[in-house]
Amino acid sequence: MGEAPSMVHRVREEEEGKMVRQVLKNRFRFSRRMFRRLKEAQAVEVNGKPAYLTSRLRAGDLIRVRLPEDSGEGVRPQPVPIHVHHEDEDLIVLDKQPGVVVHPTKRYPDGTLANGLAHYWRERGEFHLVRPVTRLDRDTSGLIVFAKHAHAHAVLSGQMKKKRYVREYLAVVHGVLPSDGGMVEEPIARSKENPHLRSVDPDGVKAVTRYRVVERLQDATLIRLRLETGRTHQIRVHMAHLGHPLVGDAMYGGETESLKRQALHAAYLRLIHPRTGETCSWESPLPRDMLDLLDRLKPC
Image (cartoon, rainbow, N blue to C red; front, side, top):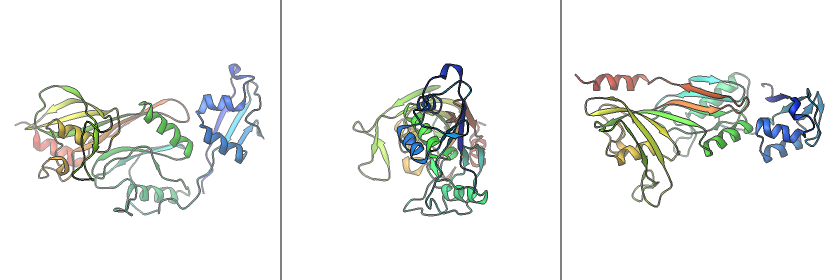
């Protein structure tokens, strides 16, 4: 099995005299729960020796934290193809293909992206619980992030809540949008007619989607969207509400002759790395089926 992840910090002059707990909280944003786990596991060392969280530090001290290893069965490994866009010791970014469910459900217990990721790690001699930071619908393609340990997941999930995690999508919608961009601020709730669908509802939860036109096509428009909230089917619901459902999205009024799945691709991600605190971003080009769709819809 792979070596348990650890985090290291050299104490700076301005941190001298502070407690281990305070320095770690400022540097790595450990949660109270994580501190409890570190204390129980005696997982903190200073200069190679076990240290209390209340120990005082000197400039130049080296703090090493052994992060708790994952345990349990986890998701069943299966040789489902995955496309790794980026990986480091804290997270992995996959470029999801359309038609693949992210995580096992009652309806889709096998053959998911999570099963493929568990298999990928097992083949490398690693074990991690599969922790998606966000989710994508089965037929949506593009970038999705998984955390490789509990601390990374907590930090990245916290960024989502504080809206520091940027997600942008490319979509092809029916009709030609008259304006070059706009914002949809309509609450979304579970449909009263069909529990598998969502709809704009004044009693729903807040949902905000920004969009701008990339290219106008034959009775269709390529748009780029940014999510400020993360509601189920948010883009699909909001664009259908505007009268411009996604091409291929039969659930929300799109036709499926041009494309057999909704024309939606998670094209861009930006986040603050849970270890370094640096801003990281990734982009994914449109997949072949959406490129072919654009070629067919180009104005003559």
